[in-house]
Length: 111
Image (cartoon, rainbow, N blue to C red; front, side, top):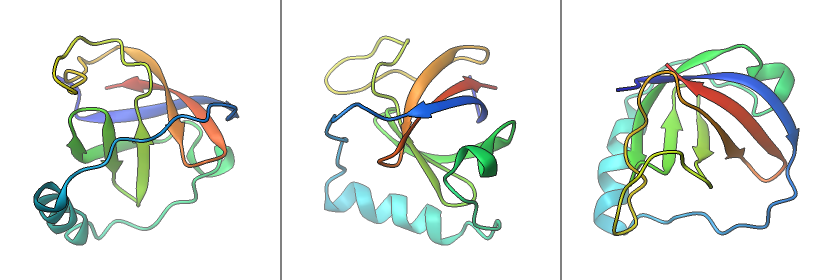
C-alpha cells in the first residue's frame, strides 16, 4: 500500500468538480493529525512540487488526501475500486491525475 506520492507533471485545471467533505467528527480526527505536522510548508505550484515525494498524513475516504507540507490533493478519478463513497487505498506504483487546489491538475505516482 502506498504511503506517499510523487509529483510527476502538471497542467492547468479546467475541472469544476466538487470536493468531498468530511463531517465534523471526521474533521476533528483529521485536524489533530494535521496539527502534528511540523514539516516546512510547501507552495502548491508546479515549481514547488515537481519531482517531490511527500508522505500521506491522513485521508478522507481515500479520495481527499492531506500530505506533509500543507498540500492537499483530491483523487477525482481514482484507479482503485471502493464503494459507498470510498475510493479504495492506492497500491504502490499506480499513477493518477489529482486536483491540486483550484488551479492545477497534477499527475502523481503513489509510492
